Image: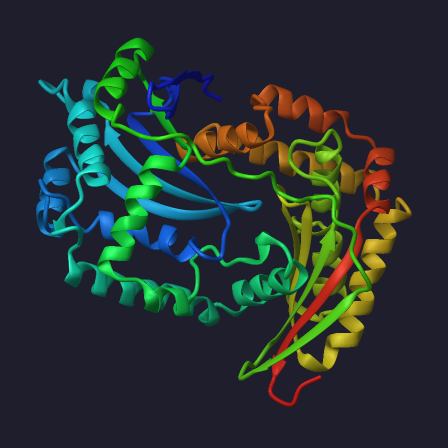
Length: 425
């Protein structure tokens, strides 16, 4: 894992430089942090596509693509991410390192200049974004928002979490709503953009074979544009006690039912018992040897898939399975049985060893991916504790059977969601 050095620009942008000789590329990621808020989530999610349509210096997609192609196929992309109750807008640029290009020694500077231009020098018509670009990107964003319904597995998990957290910011869909999208104009979006760039906390990560001082000096020169005071992002609500279990059924024209169970764990990524929760989840449902896969899918042949996963910044666990609607009650019973078995410590030493090995491999694989390295750093920064791989492995190895049972006893079912065919169970 690359160690990183943290600096802060005069305008408040946090800079994280990760020097490592493991990669032949340099990855730059600029991540903006916003609270999940239903009034502005759609605007935040739409901004990246509008800014990437063009700037004053690169006013068309073709000119931008040509400029990036001249930088030996440099890639530029954006992503909208939800971590706990915050919305992250991430811009990424990946470049080949100069040392692999004879006669080239300014590639990072040239790439960062394009990067900065797109973010801070947008193409305008008067005091608004270009109208035809906004129209086209709104149409595309509407397809993104509506598109989740085409992935019934993702849709059912999203719906379960929305029902489960309906009074909490976590229920907000990270891409926003079609209704809000329809209200946005080139002027309203530009006004929001100006406020967004002024007040949104920002982290700039650069990872590669870098000279820290030279890299920071370059960033300081290019990204020290004028900003205001950072708008605070509230902490995510984690320790929420579930009320009586809610059962939600939704009918749709589907061939296969989707059963999703949402649990409150009371633990998030920064907690001392998080690694015990990680082991719990691994034994229960995140590997082929896990209880859900073996008992629901393999032995009972009830599910096309069955797994569990954690929402680590919100303290939630989701169990998801694809079943025939007629198997709803039986599948629910077997899932409950596996969760109860975890509370009773009914898992083998082999389960422990296989899960520990699987998680260990996941941590080690992250070291070979610059995006994963930055993501782990980001996760750590959100809870005030960034772990190196050795530390993660030590904490993983220290987890005992008693730790897992203690965690299991506090995991409580909150919501059961079932997506079934029309006229189904």
